[in-house]
Length: 322
Length: 310
Image (tube, rainbow over all chains, first blue to last red; front, side, top):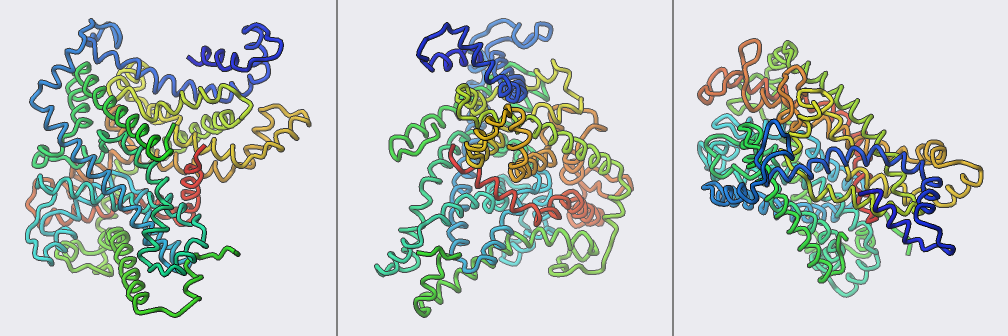
C-alpha cells in the first residue's frame, strides 16, 4: 500500500520536464531514503500488529480451521453474524454495552468541563495548580488497583463507603453484589479517576481567553455566573466538539478490563458487554470465528458513529477531525 | 493590555466584594474542598489503613490518623514471592518496552514532521486509521499465536511498540518547535537527515522525549490486558496480574491469610485480608505516586502538545 501511495504522491509533483515515474521514484528515494529508514520500523510494527489482524478479520466470514490457519477455512458468509443476531444474548449484550458506554460518555464528558470551569475561578496560581494536580493524580492508578480499591471500600459492613452510606441511613448496602449498583459504581469511579486529567485540556482553552473579554463583560454588568456562561463556556466549545466526535467513535467501546474485573455472578446480567463476551467466547471457549464476527460488528458500529459524528460536526460548526 | 498572571485579578482589584461575590467565593471554596476531599481522601485512607490495626479499620475507628500501628500486612507482602516476581517482570517489561517505544517512535515522528517529505500525509493516514479501526481480539490472538509470542515475554513489548497517539504528540512537537531555519542551516553545513535528527533535533526534544517516555512507562506499568489474554505461564506474569489475584480474586497468601473470598463479612480472616490489600495497593502504586510530584508537569505538557491540532 505504501509504495503505491508513494508513487501517487510523487506523481502529484508535476515537475517541469516530466521525467518518467521510475526516474522520479529513484530521485525521491535518493533524496529521502534516510527519512524512510527512520519511519520504517514504526511502519513495520503497525503493519504487523494492526493491519495483519485487520486482514485476519475475514475469519468472521470463514469457518475456523486449525490446520489451515486464519485465512484457510471455508467461506460461510454471514453465518456467524446471523448466529449472533439470533442468539438470546444479543439484545442483552447490546443494551448493557450501550447503557454503560453512553452513561460513561455523558458523565465523563460533563465532569471535566464543570471541574475546569470551577478550577478556573480559583484565585491564585499556586492554589489553582495544586487543585489541578491533585485532581488528576488518580488517572495514573492502574485499573486493577482501582477495582481493588472499590472492593475494599464497598465491602459490605466494613467498607469505607458502605459505612459512610450507613451514616446517611443506607443500611447494609451491598454495592458490589447488586445489579442495580453496577452502572453507577462503574461510572462514578470512572469520573473519579479521569475527570481531573480530562479537564487539563479545557483549562488550557480557558487560559487562552482574552482578558479583555472578561472586562468588557464586567462593564456590561454581567455577574459571575453569566460571565461563565457567556465567556468561558463558548471558549470551550471547539474543544468539546472535537472530544465529542472522538467519543462517538467509542459508543460501543467499554473498558474491557475494568468491567471484566468488576464482574461477579450477581451483576453479570447488567455487566456482560460485547467486549467481555468476545473474550469469553473466543479466548476461553475457542469459538474463534463466532467471536471475530461479534468483534467486527462492534468495530463497525463504532466506526460508523465516528464518521457520522464527524460529518455532522463539519456541517454544523466547521470543526472536524478530517 | 499587559497580560496578568491571573485573569480574575483585574476585577478583584477594581472594586470591593459585593455580598453576591462573597456568596460566590464561599460556594467556590466549599466545592473545591469537597472535590479535594473526594479525590485525595480515598488514597490517604488506603495508606493509613495499611498500617493500622485491622480490627480498628474494619470497625470504622480509623479516620484521620493511623491507630495501633500494625505491620502485619507489609510483613505478609514482603514474604510473598509472587509480588516480587511480578514486580521484577513489570520492571523489565517497562524498561525494555519503553526503550523500544522511544527508539521506534521518535525517528518516525521526525520523518512525519518533515514538510518537504510528500508521503507523510499517506503515512499519517496509515497510522491514524489504526486509532479508529482494528482487527479486534481474536485475529490479534491468532497472529500472536502464529508468531509464537503467546507465553513469551516479548508479547509485553513488541505489539505495543508504537502508540499512535504518542507518535502524533511527538510529531506535533517537532513540527512546532524545530524552526525550518535550523534545518536549512544544518543542510548548508552538509548535515544529512540522520545527523540533523541525532545532533540537533533530538537534543532539542528532551521535553517531549520525557513526556512520551513517561506515557509509555505508565502504560507498561499498568498493563493488565496482555498478561490476562496472551500469557498462561505464571512466572512471566507482570505485577498487575498478581495484583488481580490478590486484590480481586482473593487468592490466599503464603501465610494462609488473605484467602477470605467466601468467608462471611466481618470475619476475622476478612480483616486481615483487607489489610494485606491496603498494603498491596500502596506497594504497587507507590512508584507512580512518589514520582508524581516531580513528573506531573511533563504529563501535563503532553496533553498541551497533543491538543495542538496538526
